[in-house]
Image (tube, rainbow, N blue to C red; front, top):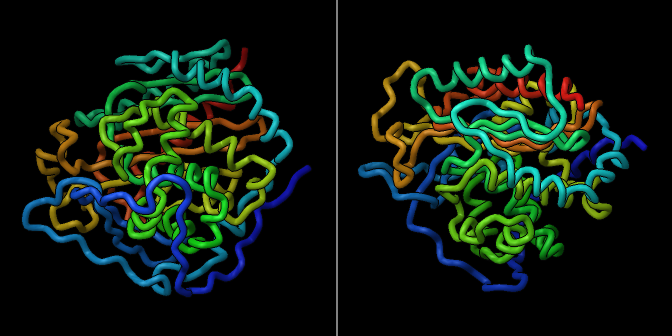
Amino acid sequence: MKLRPIILSAIIAASLVLGSCGGSESSSKPADTSTEAAVTSAGTAAVTETATAGTEAPGSQPEESSSPEEEIQDDESAFMKAAPAYDTEKAKSYISSMPQVVELLTAAKADEELASFGNAKASEAAFDKVKEELGKLTADGHKVSLIMVDLETQSGVAYKPDIPMCTQSTIKAVYLGSVLDSCPEAYEEHRIDFRKAIVNSNNDSYMKLYDIYGKEPLEKWCEEVGVDKAFAEKSFPRNYSAKDMIRLWTKLYCFLNSDEMQHSEFASYYADSACSATKIMLGTKYPVQTKAGWESGKDTWKNYDPRDPIPEKYCDGDPSNDESATNDTGVVYTDKGPYIFVIYSDIPFSVYYDYIDPNALNDLAVALNELQAELKA
């Protein structure tokens, strides 16, 4: 049966009642700060988001987040309205095989070269196209890590999937899913914050929820897919791999496609996650559920201008710095079947609106989609 995602009802900007579920009522905020440019729905103004996540850069102050009225200008965004329908029964059918997929992902190996895993292989041309795009992204010495698994063939590709990277705001997708999985009543109590944290990538909303519900919900998911529970210790994890994140996305996939969540408001938010290259390039052709993350790489906390030289400290591989990043994670529901992917990079983010400056990962997202389409046993 094919169904469209639910179009969101109008959000009332009202005060919300704080709630708690298990664990501690609040967790102490980290002392660090990570700043990203949050972009609203296509065509609306970009908003600078702030959050505590790393050590604040000397002499810089993050800008304050805007009010809900400024951020949520159109509750029915262009992407949410245009999101294609997908075969929800087919999507659910992959849930039972997810333990095998997790085992496959855990065992996947790739070092300096793009490598296939599983029994299905793509054409040489499709494989080489992904290699070419990776080569372009790493040409200036930048780090890129990638892993993708096709749920139909239980096969995929990986490139340096075990190297430590910073999740940036991709963490919000799996953390918020874990909270609702453990504490379903949290959504009604904090629905505006759930929406803003996914669609606008608002850090204040995310940190509010992290402080209320703590690390326990994500720790539970980590334990179930074999990811070190220390992943959940910080609101913005550092030194964790694309392989860690994709295993957590297998949990999110199962949660978003459960009977309770499949047609929910919350699930529909992932169709319009700010600044996702996969959403931008594929979101009107296929149903997508994505979450991007980024760091501008500028001490001014403003958006990175790609014409400027990149400060050395943002390219030195030291995860204690607030390094630059352009990341993308999620699911694409193609006619062939869904695939889950994670792309991490330390490339400075240079997209202020979804369509003005090309996202650095756009071409890689397309090449990865074309490779998945050709996977054959």
